[in-house]
Length: 553
Image (tube, rainbow, N blue to C red; front, top):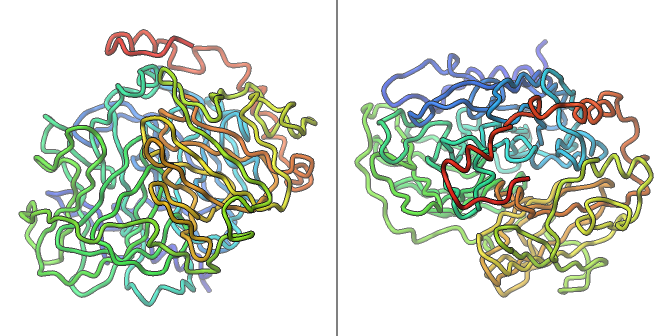
């Protein structure tokens, strides 16, 4: 008899409720399927693609953008062998892959963060990531966590389905075809762009499910989401951006939000929502409008963004509607998402004493910027040459012993932490992500009120605009070094990060056996020549396109 897991994944491949297809051509769904299971090889390679009509080489997982959906069932074990087959000298040829939102409790060594939990995987090598997600379910994703490599395309969805989802009564269809990815896309390779001063970097196009158009470009295909009248769809939206946040809406349709970053929420009706880089939302779309084509809109915060000629757009197409562009119009939003209206569905309530400043550990972090370099409490993060986890396993225990100096915060075990982050500079809203945890957002940026009773629980939160603060709470129940950073890759690369080292003295015992292959990553990477690392001429190429550059490193 087939196992539940096999049956479910088979159903994913045969689902017919909605599909992502070309504007002009209808493909059988199973021919378009791009889903793999939790036990798999994930090959990272360079391929030439043109998702918006502009040809460029990209760094891809599984040879596609976005990468294949990794689909699992609650309780599954993961064994993902990342195989590095990169060859393009213009881009980085080592890699690492982070499983965004997975807590990795007891498996910090496979969190995938270069120079925090591991050294990068060298060209022509591989590394097996073995882990389980405990009882986690929901919408996650994976991406490179090596310098700015994810901006060249290494990004893909990771979904953990819950056969006993308490909100399943709200929807009829939830499968591989109801995953929606939003991404900014660049025509210049990321190592070159990383030398530009942050204000000089803007995406060239918005890709929805891997397709889009750019200003002045051709009428390339747009993504189409097919729906059947009368059915309710759980659409899982992932902002796998390098920089942009988006205002998302679907003409003439409301959305009922039921999940934020892998955590179920009380159902909330909205007609538009802002989603920051790294964030995810599940919402229910009720397909009850007249059979027709409707614009799906995702306007980025890029200057002069528009919907002209189908930019920043995709198509919602009811079965029976003609194969044609929509002629619907965007209306003014009257029910936009406000984060403080989101409330955790399961076990609501922030840990600890419900008063500001009354946690076991109270941290204040002030974000600054000088000459384009970001800092937290006046320290700009610079990746150490030895991963923080390796430092801890080698005997370093105190913040004064751990590198990078001033960027590692040592936290005691099993304490309630309240973190206040004040943004004193430009470039917001900054999407702040904490690895290894979800957290309760007791104060949202731009809001003066506190909520310790039933705040939203998530793993990426807005750090706000200039002179705004946000406050989160979490419990230090996951020993190991965990990255806290802005999820705008250009900001992270410019120093916007710290490491939260939870109970370093307990990390070895908490992790247990670490495979020899992990120990081999650093000696292999450290032996690479500049040519083997790649992107040797990126600074010279950056000089050809801009005079607003950081000093060479």
